[in-house]
Image (cartoon, rainbow, N blue to C red; front, side, top):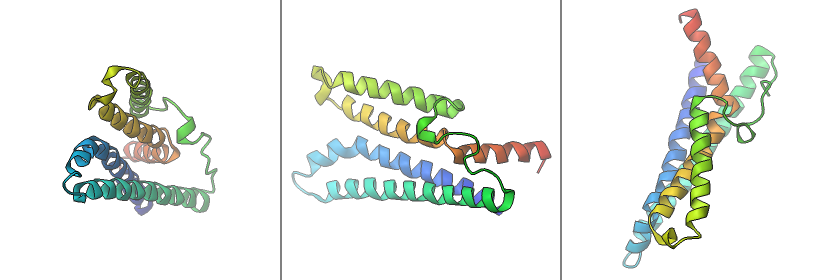
Length: 161
């Protein structure tokens, strides 16, 4: 039980951290215009981007180690869980479907808009934010850790824990 809660906390910490990292893209044009007078705002946005990214990826690495340890030592099972990694899997569940469609759409729109006169508008930053966020969520929601959390939650509901 402790393992499952720790795994779930690490996973959702990663989701929040990577969402913050993606959201910093929305603030970058303002930080850039403010940096003419003062580089402090630019430094804060850059620091927030890197720290939240490092926290997000570190927590997902830690969660994956926890998942592997538990499956190997407690269940004696296969750590691949009969599935591919999150980056190579598509449409595995409803949150993953939303992330996958958003990722593909935002990428295509971002590429198209960069060949038009709209490329210098704030819309480019919004599309970049959506792409970065949905790419990270694609990997997380299609991945083995999310699958492990969902299996645990289904077992808990079925056994009335």
